[in-house]
Image 1 (tube, rainbow, N blue to C red):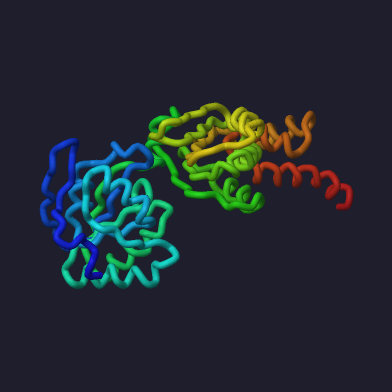
Image 2: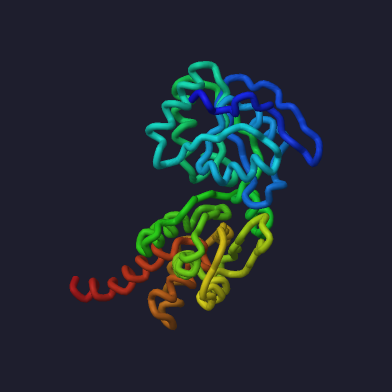
Length: 307
């Protein structure tokens, strides 16, 4: 990698009309957070790191070039992504071995969060190289603080499976986690995901769909899972990047006998699936488990008749 930094170019960045020199960096892998939309959401430390790194690696050189041009940074980015990691990764590690500084950015947000940078960082740590996070923009945290949902505990679950069964199974696994759940979701799947979440987690559970964060058409839509599911079912074309948050389950102090009584009462007036969903809302227990218990309860009289 002999052409990582523009030949003869100054290591500096520009703020308005002022050119700021970038100090030399110690050899390390620098994980640099970049804006998730608004290019103003960049830190001074990140700018200095992008300008001063011997090697600047990114997912898409065209995307990163827009950011670099905005701040007058002449460093030449090289590509590192999931399709060339086997080839580009060793070259970046060789640069570290040679005592050079390597900065890694994703297309947007904090590297390693749902992107291939994790693999490179893991390899660098295993090889004994210094890894330095340069914090900044983060879509999950921006969504969390703007959602109005509890933020004392949260669980980032990344993307849900694309297929319905896998999606529902994963939601069932997370149903009882005592924290706000955070997911990334694509616009063409958000309707199906909300419908599945309402069914598995309980329709009354609070949630928020956070779309196009920090961008011109930023939107926070808050409500119950049922309300949001109904809304997005009627939207023909959803656009933009989405973070979905689901509030924690209601605190449950119901004893085993209480759960049994609730299930018995609900089963008298509701179909099994609906009763399981309502019981999940009342107790905070996973709907899937309650549904199975209802089925078991219905089989008990038949067993007694055969005994």
